[in-house]
Image (tube, rainbow, N blue to C red):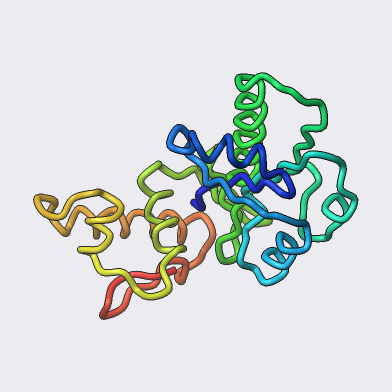
Length: 198
């Protein structure tokens, strides 16, 4: 999943404070001197807004009504000063909500994958998956090319050696069978000479 980010737009003082302690956070902190530069990044698809929070100092209609920005992702801190604990709580709560919403509807091929419930579904059926099956699907989804058994072993299982390759192949076989049985889909995971791909 993409790392969450917090973008501060026209709020340099707060950015300087957060930057000093950014090692405490599990999200990226981005600074934008003005709204135009921020919107240029969004328009050129250099910034992912789905899983990020935007912090502004005062109400900004240009951001609030932009078609690529969800207003629920905007945090306005116009009543200052604010206690640092309250600031962190507000940001963390916002990021948790966004992460939950983002994970509840992930489009993969003709399916919707809900990471929170571990259910993959289409318009007719749904199927409960294991955590390992989710990991396999996400790894293959983020790959542009076929991935070998060794790559799956390293990236999904976290082993560079010691895991028999038939363990990976057995998991893939079972996952493909579950998808075939539930959705009558033979091509969800495709195998080839170079490995597996979605």
